[in-house]
Amino acid sequence: MQKILGISLVALLATIMLAGSVFATTGTATVYCTQPSDCTQTILILENKDASWVAKTGDGISATLTFGTVGPTFKGTLTTTGLTGNYALIYKPDTANRFVDWNGAGGIVLATWNGNTAGLAIDKNLVNLPIAADWNINPTPDYCNNANGFDSYAHCAGAKIWIVPTSDLTSGPVLPLTVWNPTTYLFETDLVTYTMGSPTTACESSQCVAARCGISATGDPSFSSMVQGTTSQSGQTTIVTNTGNVQVTPKISGANWVGSQWIAKDDGYWMPVGATQWSLPTPSWNTLTTTPTSIGTLSPLGTATVYYQLTVPSPQPTDSYTQTITFSASC
Image (cartoon, rainbow, N blue to C red; front, side, top):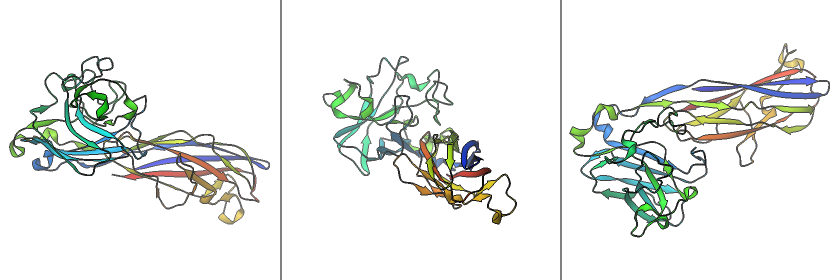
């Protein structure tokens, strides 16, 4: 899977201008499960989200819940990072008016703990998730393909699992929530199901979901007028998005700048790939190379913002230059 980022550089006299455009392709990954017995395990990533309900990945705050999709009890493990204080893992049902009825009445506290946990054991007597009264058992619109204006989950219906501070719950702690503090919560990145039963008889092929592996990028980097021998940062950024439903590790690489009058590499109408540097939001400039370099990992729907700066060599002939930057990823 590759995403190609084309950047063009236009030079006038001793000044240089930079603009860019984006081209993206996507790929496919393997299937989540290849035989019925594999379908008995669910792995759910929980992330904090912004006001537009987009997962805030890469900030060091997340959780991974692994549980048996089918079994005599709801049994699994939980690992968290970036949390402080007392927290609860909850099953949070919805009503049709979920943005008004936000308190999760009828939900279930699955576990509680303090701080971060690594492999916290969970074993809860449940029947099925979602429960029959949960609107998410058959939502309209559903949670796939941005049908509801917010989500593009792998599963269109199912149960929501959240992590919330125990102080936001009714004394016990139990649901419903008594206050709404979404900036302190970790939310689902997909809907899940749990069925009480025997894995060897209850695991159905419909629980095996084909993994989607893809990235996209938006935002064309550009530079204003530049003088040779100077460094300038781009006024635009590129947003790399995980468009699939599995974790990806995007990598960035590039090629040499080439001028419109370029004939041979020794004629001066080119610039080395390393004239471009890139950075993530925390400023730490990296020299662009021809070798794909990781920009981090992205959970499904996660994003990364890439910044650019350019150092124009001196001397540098006046010309119109182009460079290709490639984002590639494997799942």
